[in-house]
Image: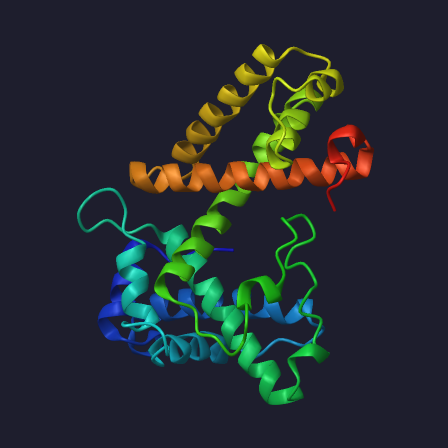
Length: 264
């Protein structure tokens, strides 16, 4: 999915609507809106909307005041998506923000068409190869507006997914068992943990430190325009996702049933 460039985002904010922008900028935002809305609609078995309609709906959702937010989504988005330097913007982060708004657009559309959100398959994963994130996860309670802080946490979590995927792919069985131990409240020095991992706790500690360092390295490499604090937040979120995926792996493979006893 192509994300508009920094200058196109600035032009769009200055002009207030894509339809008022230069043809190239207008086309870029129409393509973005169409891709984001269509991807959400496909997960609930609903056909796509006309390309020119999708971004307009996203714009309208941004301009409508949110009940629990002091600022409109559009204004807050540009503040939250600044890079490390003054005036810098991170296009990928802006795109992640508008994906959240696109999900809201789809929710409103489904509400209007079906009158009952539960009739839609909101629990279907957005992407088969993703982290199991569903439309219900994106939307939360349809009767409760998302706060600025919640929107920020959602974006950090989304940016953390590719980092977590790389970490899990690189992790051997012992490293995964180490994360299962942390997720289930067991110390690395627990005999059951060392027995399942087949290494001593000192080795597990080194594996943990190595994964944390790698999370920070991967985050900084993938998001070079993010500030140090932002990279740290993304790396922390990635580790949380890693632990969750390792628990799922342990349940599927029965790699450490002794540690999983008593957990659902």
